[in-house]
Image (cartoon, rainbow, N blue to C red):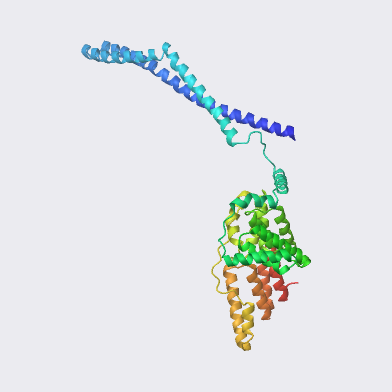
Length: 421
């Protein structure tokens, strides 16, 4: 492999040197041609004027011109001949100096071109660095990911750059001192640890906050849910100034094991890939998450701010989805259904059908997140319109064909409506 790389490097330098010398040669040739042309001009003028003098004598012999006219013409041509002869003499024997100067200038141009090109490449290029195959780049990214700094080191490096948090009131600070003391005395108090994690974060003490959150997970044991691990990862990333450490990655992995569609965990997983040289994976994760998320999800703005760059780095064509129009209504919610229970049967059915039809029309015209499709299918199931619910379910599978997580989210509503297995 090393000999192959050496051969590639040698071939690169040979080609680069040949191209540079070729360009320098063309410039020198152009300069010398211009010099040769300028040397030939005076000699050519001398010959022209001598020919004109002979032509005057022939015209006089044939009687075309008078002696006086021929005399005047001879004087003018002779004057021009003397000037041309003088110019030709200046480009002649003493003219070796201008030719030498031209050669020196040509050599200087070649030297500057070759030396400047090599110097510029040495500064902004990568001498001796061969092209990397995709497999090699992926391996290097994996190695960098495995060797990246841990949480403690990252927090130490990020401490100076963390944004300042508004100073809390003296009363709140006093309560925090009491809370810390109480938790220190009773470290197994789950509620106390939860309060400590939440309120340390409010003060911007993210390091202390994620330590308390880790204790919360430890106390919950198997009862810890995906949000617990997602919160832990979030606090670690905040404490490290936006960096996803190996410890935060472990928390994200566990959160996704418990809930594969967890939004914060998926966002930070994409950020991890972006930070470890895998923009291709970051783009895939964020594109799928963006397609499945409501516009007001907290991770949508940071994804939208970064996904175009990830797409460019990954060599992907990306067209941002059309911004959703202001919805005419979210469809029947649990509160709507509860309010409908107090109406008469006719009024209740009319209200539900109106909201269902409005939601169906909006999704048909503008589209919407998976949650709205699931809500529509569920509402149609409640109304007993299973055939229509089945058609909406089939359409949703086509709309989200590139987002399997979104399809799975809608599938549960389709099962409840009796139109999916």
